[in-house]
Structures are given as C-alpha cells and as structure tokens.
Image 1: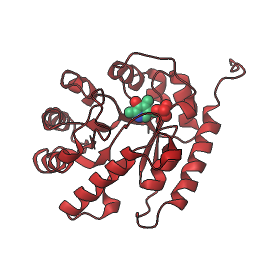
Image 2 (image 1 turned 90 degrees about the vertical axis):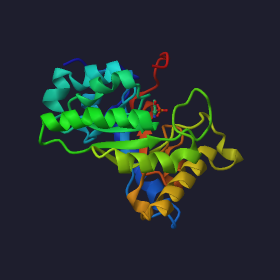
Image 3 (image 1 turned 180 degrees about the horizontal axis):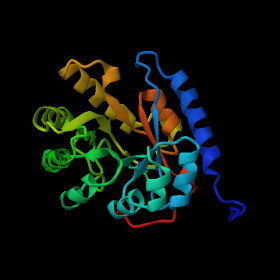
Length: 258
Ligand SMILES: *Cc1c(COP(=O)(O)O)cnc(C)c1O
C-alpha cells in the first residue's frame, strides 16, 4: 500500500470534523426555523477518485461535482462502482441543455441542484421520462431550483423575483421531477464583520415566499447554501444542504469554469 505523503489531506477526519461543526451550528440555529439536520454534500470536483473512496469509507454518501465530464468519469469509475454502491451524486454545476442526456444516464445520480429556468426543467423532465420508461425501479429525479441571489452576470440561476414561478412550473408541469427546494451559490468572500450574508437573506426570502404561496411547511422545502468558508453561518440562517469542498479535500488548483 502506498502511504500518503505528509501534508496530504486526511479526508476521513475532515469529514468527521465537518459533521461535528454542522451538528453544532444546527443546534444554534434560530428557533423560528424548523430543525432538520443539514445534509453534507462533499464536493469532490478536481479531486482524485482515491479521496472519494476515503470519504465513502468514513460513511459519507453524498458527493457533489460540477463539471459534467468529470462527473461522468467518476460515476463510471470501476472502483467507485464496486466499492461505493450507495454513493449519491449531486450535480451542482451549470446545467447545459446539450449535456442533459449524458447526466441523466449516470449511475447513482441522486440530485440535480441547478435547474435554473423553465426550458432546462422541461428538457430534464423529458429526458428523465425516458430513463424511467427504461427502468421501472427509477423514481422521479430529485432537483433543486437554482436562484441567482447575487445578481452577478456570471452566476446562473433564476432571479429571486421568478423563484415562485419557476417552482410552480417545475412542480406543476414537470411530472417526472421531484422538486425538493432551492439553492444558491452567491457572491464569494462576504465579509461577515459587516453582517449576515445578503445571499443567504435573499434565498431565505425566496424560501418563505414559496412556502407561503404553496402552503408548505418551512421544513418541507430544502435550502442548499453554504460552502467551506461559510457553511456554519448558512446553517444558522436555515440551510439544510451544505456543499463543502476544499475544507474536506484540500485546496483546489485553479481550473477554468466549465
Ligand atoms: C466548488 C463548489 C462548492 C464547494 O466550494 P468550497 O469552497 O471548496 O467548499 C460548492 N458549491 C458549488 C456550486 C461549487 O461549485
């Protein structure tokens, strides 16, 4: 067996530490937000399969990737297929129409977190209809609606003002999708000494609006927000899914946006 070089990340202990911090933040969460234990999605983009195997052996089941080609390679990797039978892949990257057919056919695809407009939702719904027709054991495809809370041009997502409409479209017109909630990426590098993160405030507003429009209990609608730098603050504000990459797997080399 090859020993890991000094200074390389210890994914197992990083996952344990992250779960402990999630637990602590969850216990501090404001009382008005219904408790549901946040889900940790370990974001393994740019990282080798070996580190995913490490995370899996520590009990981690949910992994996130945001480059389609990389996700295809990892989801079909023979070691992952053999040793990680219960892995649940979350696609968290930009959902391009021409990549949808590749994504829906991936083994162990669990959720697409980045449905950002009606057209994409419709294509995804059609593609998943075919997958379900070919496999009677498949359930509806889990999705989240991505909202561009920061209004930055380079970020995808529907505008906050359209969140209710897109939610309505997906839940009423896309019968093969199961919409669990909403997600945002948000602006990077918020300075918490200036107050709470405006992206989190904005996403929680969308959450409240969708819940009140559709008469849903707040605990029924998932909120995916928070990454390595701010998942604790995100949980305190109501996040139920955190996507944590570098603080588990180590810093990433820069890679052009897919
Ligand atoms: C890369 C990425 C993350 C994880 O970011 P870290 O800062 O490494 O934790 C979370 N969400 C999305 C959409 C990402 O692309």
